Length: 388
Image (cartoon, rainbow, N blue to C red; front, side, top):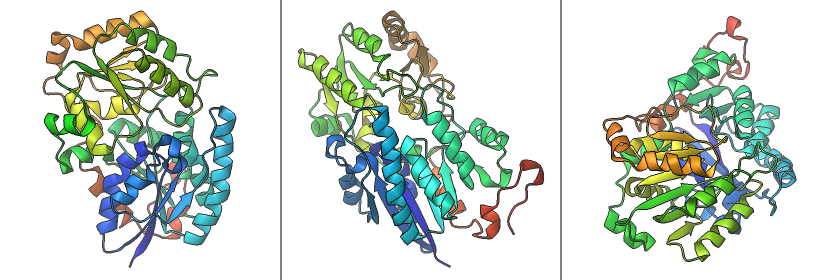
């Protein structure tokens, strides 16, 4: 019997993680796939990445205009409200059998709340993680408690979701679906990537992926040390756009100012997943505070320097070095990350976030979990029972 499964994506980052689940759901003979996009996907300022989804051959069933042209926390809060109103109509009309959400963007509070009111079961990817320095952490935990099926990246995350009171039959360790790109696609060679990006990657290159620290009152407070440290680094420096959070425009302007002073480097508004993964294979270092530095760089044993509070508490592989948001701490940690001794220590390492088979595991559960009343009724762990 065909089941209607809706998937919601808010940004370039989560679409990269959802690409292979979407591919596999679209190909499944018993799935009626519906896709809803919102947030920065529809913003020209952030690259209007909905076009990338369409270019990949997916049909967009709902476009939720909700992102305010703002750089404040008030703008973020209002975005949640606008998204909630619009999603009430969109999901109320669509009425999927399941709604698939991923990760921890603040916008996810809107679809989770709407689905809860409409009695639509929620499946959630990447619950059980920790990022203590961002509001993402509270969002992720809230969505976990509103969800009915859970797909975690690591065993520690699975156990953490169960410790939150979720019944074990609901919680599946699948790995992170972003890692499926590495197994299922052929990455660009250095020559292809250089031609595509108009770059010389034979010279030392650092990739900076840095976002506002949304739990701080001044969300760009820790960026002062980062940019001061960058002034002392001689190599080519590439930047990816930050998330559309309070403070993102200030970070973008600061990056442009840095590059305008004759520094060798580039700022990319958006990189598709294949280009981004190919770049991770070619650069010498990732510097910043992005979950990508934690979850994806281990697949390449890429030295990664994680700065400050934002990802505090998240499970790490041994390629990730921590530093405080102070200039000297950043520079000293970069020195260690560049050392031949450290690079040698990474040989043979594995990525704790999965093996590249996450999508098939996720789709198997989504297409077989019983769509009975018991799926919606969540019992305390002591009274747990699986649906018939």
